[in-house]
Length: 414
Image (cartoon, rainbow, N blue to C red; front, side, top):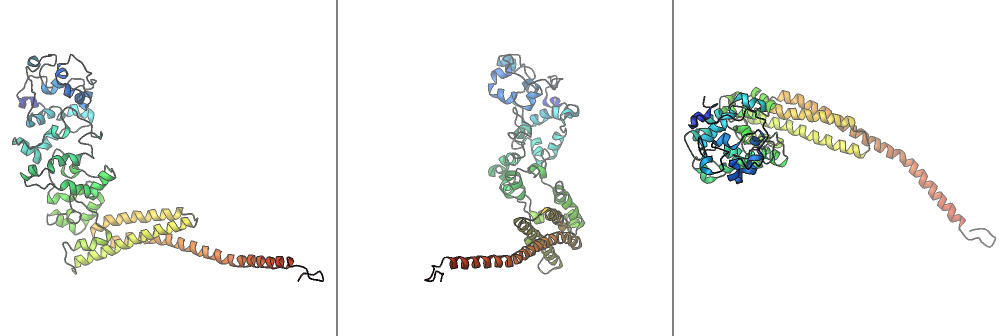
């Protein structure tokens, strides 16, 4: 039962391994009678502001010793563990975090240590490799913050930087033949832009694809399912198409074949056919299918742009655009479905959705044309009015000129 009673593995049987019975004990204050914080002043603030302190966890619960002693020899007696090894740290953390009864109240999982053992990190750790990370390398040791705290290493915005501490180290990664440019690629990718620039926390970080405690790169046949954690509808469409079975047997890289991995890109509509030629020679049936797909996507995209321009024209004309905006929303919904269904390579399904886009956008265009015709009709109706107004002005001018002429010898104006 190593996962639940790791102190046995640490050789410290009999220590107060269990934490305080009441996990809701308030955090410690600056009690000068507590010997650990009297000597280890550098850890005071870190320990007293962490989530463990909030739950009443004290120094001796992890390190052992006698916290009531105020001198080092007496404080470090008994089952004292001042500097645990990396393996000991993982087992020590699991003494609580593998206990379902203790973690249930916080809604925390309990399989982290088991997951760690399945990962490349854990495998190296078991062999005593000093390069392998342990719990405190990622979560800190004394100052452990919640993942929702932006100062935490495990906050979504900080996870890629955390992983990059090791995975951009050329010397360290050189030992294992690993690349060091993944972080730079990720930061510039569609996922990285969504995370760092847009602060969209639905975007995956390193752990979204590789796992956290069970960190491993997905296998070739697993890529589609990993991407499908977020892109569910795309995954289903991909599985229905001809690429799905090929990817399932490992004969292609699945999503990575078109979108890349760390440098994930969204393939532009007008580059779809070119993307297909990475695997399929130009002129083949597959490449021709790519051209047909591109034509449908580009057409639908163009119709959306024209509809948006038409609505802007209607707004300038002072027309009611409520109906037009609703039609545009319908067209956009169908276009988003096209972006999903295209992965099935089903031209008939794309044509059905394309018809929805075309119908909605054509109605918007017709509304704009009608508004333009009415504007010209109004302008034409105003021509006689302007002509009559001009004639009245000219006649008035002549009469005024006639009245202002000087009188002749006979008393009449000339």
